[in-house]
Length: 413
Image 1 (tube, rainbow, N blue to C red):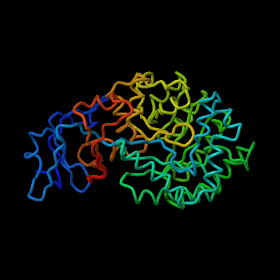
Image 2 (cartoon, one colour; image 1 turned 30 degrees about the vertical axis):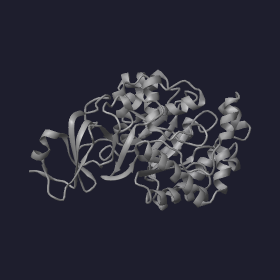
Image 3 (tube, rainbow, N blue to C red; image 1 turned 135 degrees about the horizontal axis):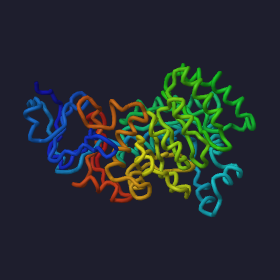
Image 4 (tube, rainbow, N blue to C red; image 1 turned 60 degrees about the horizontal axis):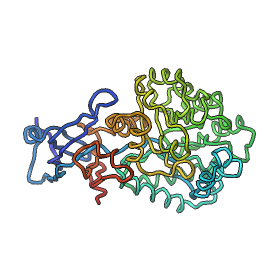
């Protein structure tokens, strides 16, 4: 039986469906076509089969890709776009020799963003988020995880998530809000992290759950922030309250955050710059996605995450931008893909799978996003090139020509 279509994209030089097997399974189809129905992929395959497999009528819109490359839209599974102000002054301090910890002692870091976010209006928060989502769209990103975590009190955290929900209704991308009240210990709980965890579990989490916007909770398990024991307790309580789980793990120090993530059944463990060989094997043998953020390593002049080791161990690895105002002010997933290839040992194919299908898995959207196959959301990018390897090769200047979300053209150059 032929599938019905609303429009057909023809003359695709290379179509990356991401339906192959393994870390490098881009599912490449040359001389391809893609059919869309009701915002979903109705069919994808060789152009020779389009009329055999699809029902085309006089109302079917036919669009030419002009021989270009077509890929799924990027799934950026780790961002922090809900903030009150940027922190370029800290960037300058870092350039002058100060490290992350020294900047925090001087009043910078996450708590700097907390002070500015608490005083910002909802309109400012929304304007900042919308501005950067627009840039992300122009870089081919069609699904974005958006963390709170710069409020660290009940009212500001709820306000930030409210803004995320409002923005989600206004932008073409799919937005996945995450509650990250456990981003840092706020000044009013200084020296009392256990009490702050209690406050989150007993007072804030229930209100966030009642609000109904955040799907995930996240916690920063790191030396000087939250211990593995505190992270374990928080994630266990959050799971009981109905949240899916994420964790910032093993970024600056090997604290065992990855083991916490695996034990808790977290969807992903993120950063992993300092992950041990033992925990590489542990996450590779689990269902937890290893989400790497090479832009943060570049921005902070830290060693890049061990992508090759994780891939060789058999871990499912995702790539994300970590867009945030302090440690990685980067909206560009193409740049992240380039860094993964140039600095983390990925092949081009592995990097593209990690930035699409595996990013979707990290958001528990692996049956909807990140692939171009029947029943998946028709989120895709037409690239102004005829070879998919050009995407990371053209460093810092993405060749995005057209972006579609749910089968609708939402950006073009």
